[in-house]
Image (cartoon, rainbow, N blue to C red; front, side):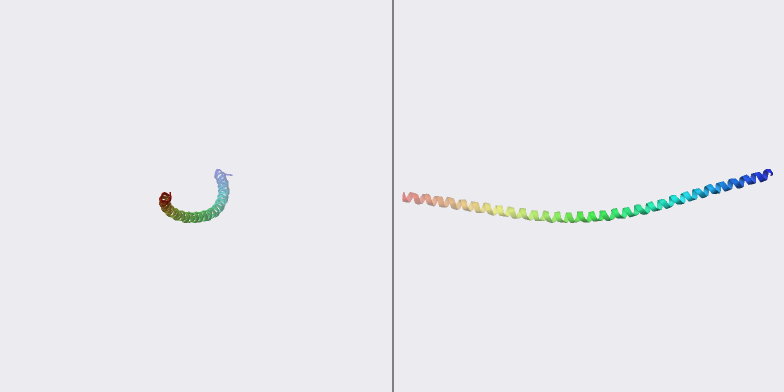
Length: 115
């Protein structure tokens, strides 16, 4: 075999090995790509689930906030009613005390007349 033929055979063998190596690398990259695609699909599904959960939680928080606002308004109304009732009670007390003083004065005057 001549030197040219030897180099040609060596080149062909080198080319075949390089081609086989590239083919294996291609197959490995395709497996990695498919695995990555599956992972992305899984992650997307997980994110969709998390998004739905967060949307549900946001809705519950809004409901709780609305309820708290209604309760706060009701508490403010009750405080106003309580303040009004307290004022009425103080006015009634003052009226009762005034009448008691008047009645006490009338009784004192009547006992002086009878005594």
